[in-house]
Amino acid sequence: MAEKVKRYLLENDPVETFEFIGICTAQSDFRLAWQLNTRFTIFLEKSNELIEVPIKKTKEFDRYNFYSYHDRQNLISYFLIRNKQEGHILLSEKPSIDYFLILQENYILEPQDIIDELRKMDSIIAAFAFSSDEFHLSEYLIFEK
Image 1 (tube, rainbow, N blue to C red):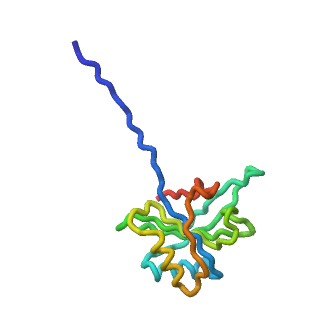
Image 2 (image 1 turned 45 degrees about the vertical axis):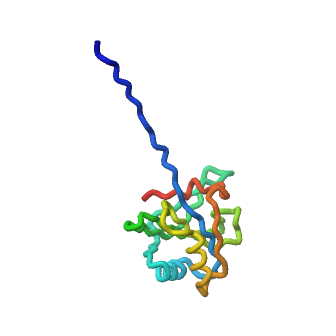
Image 3 (image 1 turned 60 degrees about the vertical axis):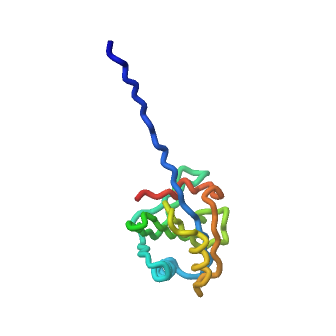
């Protein structure tokens, strides 16, 4: 008699790991991106895509520009997003933050080391680490590579 073969389907639920670093500065987005590129030897570029975040009261979306860089060697993705764009606040939980630097799939760099480097830059007033759990919209900020 033939033995019944049992098949199991293992599904790997992707867990995105990313850090939020809040930046307070009066710099424009392209100027800040250029300074970050210089300081960290990365290549943030303005994306042609937009982040779409639903508005609670309507079925419309707020759209936000962002800069991105995918480090193929270290497998880290960097995203720079202005918190306030066109009269809308992306993450209303932190209205005093001007920009968010998001590191996705970062298993190499220490966020505190990045924050320390940011604080050394003349144009940056303050830099803070945040957990993605602090924001109700963080699910919309998971980027496709």
